[in-house]
Length: 593
Image (cartoon, rainbow, N blue to C red; front, side, top):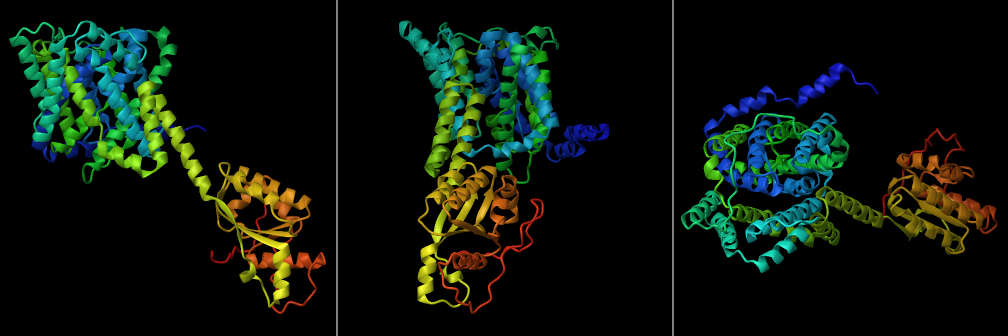
């Protein structure tokens, strides 16, 4: 189907910044400027640490925080979002650096930016709401564990060992430390983490990450702690934009990593925006604009040597708590970091790697919401299984695979729960028996007729469980199926029902139905089940009509005396009609009992 140029332009224009986005920035600029300054102070050590952890160096983290932070704030769909390098993205980038080198990471970031813009144009942001909470919580827990384990080599003061997984690298780093302990690095890392964790509980408004890093750097310089390896030289400013890193011949092999990076950027950014909305009153993000903004940011950041970026939940939370109300705060954060890059690079280069490891260790610990995890685990067994499985998969496998596994398992468990709601119960039909009857006739009817009421969904996940039981019903002459309480039916459910009816008919048992809803007719007609019921006039609008039809069938078979009925009996459903013609009898199934 072709799309008109006018409609395509309308889609693009809907993703671009609007005048209202800038008007909000003039409401309270002083508050936004202060919030942006606070976030920049918190973001500086995180940007440095995540840059080092990614394998491209601290300067890559700073470039990402400046370039991506500014563009994502300008083009994104949230007034409160703060973007830059994150721990979750670092986890994905480490194996890409090992396999393809720094140029491969920059190329992947560029490709991910294109994919994110494509997702925005396809309006894919709205599907974020279908991700279950246990998957999100398990994903966050797994990321926290991975971030913490990634810091072990720097915290122990050893060179990062080779390894395919973070668990292997951590174990080898511990072995190296045992052979040659570096207690200086361990002390600095633990001291910075302790300052951040205990300081945040004492004075939440003070940026103790900066306090800890400054103190650790001062101690390393003052006491000449050679064991505390520094970050190293940083460039005094951002490099000129360049595409020299781009290797067109490697695009095919980098497509899968680019999809993983784009998926993670979309997931984490939309999660962060949702969290920010929940922390405020009156704020609501545009998910498609947010994807577009992250796409623009990831297109530009690699040109300046930056790693792929995404929204940062921790920095966004600091932004909201600091009183931010517009994009001006996030833009200020990027501008302050740019000033630091140009004016304070020599000072920043002296920060010990162990101090940054302490910052990230504390960040990983603070990512884990024990109360939320406990509540999720206690909710249902299925929620606990999905949460734990997603967390373990995040730790042991790729993050995107972990989310996919979590979604698949959550979907399977949800289907099982829905399928278990469906049931078929034998019910007493005497209350719906038309006319006056003797006890003897009641006994005869109960001997030859059995009625079942089907409740809930009849679909592929659960239809076989109970509908095939129909084939094994006791030796009766008529089975009445009351179907007005079926909530949904698919082709599988209709096929199983048809199979059960055919088996009963071969045993000489007539199957009558009542209360088939219009929504069920299409599935029944598609597999020929409705024609099977209509061919002998065995479909009825209500249960009393079906019972009257069953009595007539028994009279005809000579199993009941041909006694007159004192009350008029309703006629059965109309004669067989073409498959496309619906039955016009209204569904007047009695109230459930």
